[in-house]
Every structure is written in C-alpha cells, then in structure tokens.
Figure 1: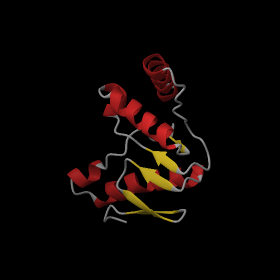
Figure 2: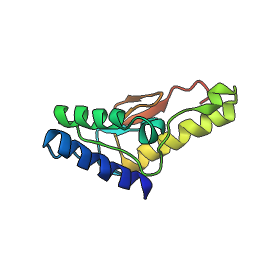
Figure 3: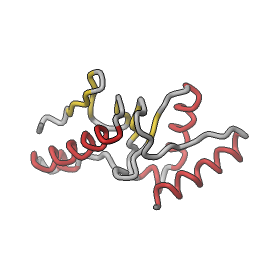
Figure 4: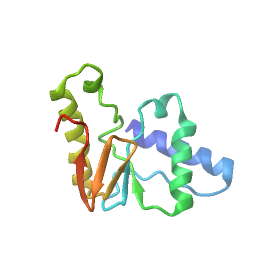
Length: 123
C-alpha cells in the first residue's frame, strides 16, 4: 500500500537524519491519538509528516495513522454541502471507533473521554 511504503521511506529518512529509530505506526489499535494529516503532506510536505512523527516520538505518545483515511479535509464545507460534510466527518469517526483511539489530531473534531464527537456543524 502506498501509505505504508511512504511511511517506511520517511522512517528511513529520519533514521539517516537523526540516528534515532522513529516509527510511523499504521492502523495500531488502542492508540491515544489517531493522526490524520493533509494528503499534501504525503506528496508535497514530507517534512510535516516527519515533524509530526518526531514530535510524537519525543513526547512518547502512543499514536497511529490510518491506512483507510489519508485526507481529513472536509470539502463539503467549501461547497456548503451538509451531506458531504457529515459523510466526511462520519468516515473519520468510524475509523477512530474501529481503531479504538482516544483522540484525533489533524482534523476538525474533538473528543470527550474515548467518545469521538464531530464538530463540523452538519452532524
């Protein structure tokens, strides 16, 4: 899968740069944070992805990324389409629930305990 290959490449880049084995976990259940970056971070801004991985590693945070969701932009908001906004929010919430994560990072959502709630105004 492209996401996993990209993450492995970025892990190798960070190892060469820092000498530290920094992992970018994918689909790791029961993580504290599900990090969903912008899709541009994979193609145009790999330093953003590596920066997030370094930050989580440094803080010792139990985190993961999803192989199912590689974009958190809610494009329904741009076109004032409530059904699209809700669908985009729900796919993120569903993935967070399936991985049993506690919090989301990189998306427009907040958490209360382990219950993820959408804040897109369409839900």
